[in-house]
Image 1 (cartoon, rainbow, N blue to C red):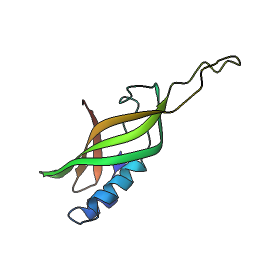
Image 2 (tube, rainbow, N blue to C red):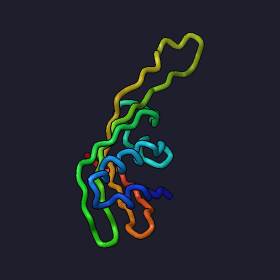
Image 3 (cartoon, one colour):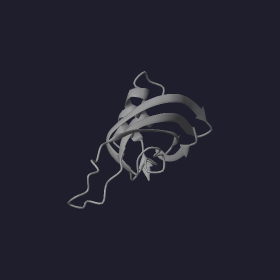
Image 4 (cartoon, helix red, strand yellow):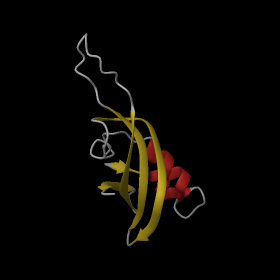
Length: 114
């Protein structure tokens, strides 16, 4: 379970967006739906995430954030000695919805269709 404690603690302050971006960028592909969001490659990389806040709202008991995630993916070859396919990073982008529980900081993440 993802817990965005620092983001929850900064809700309502001018630093909230920066803290939220930082916490999301520290998450990996095992916690974010990056693999499911691929459009031009077949394997998501999670070492160069960049997050853009699209919208924020407050609902009963939750802080909701719609964010865009810029990342990279690759299409690996067969790893044969004579495989001519270079493994180059491809730019990827997906939009996710995060709902942060205002009591526990537990956060759910859902991939959104663009």
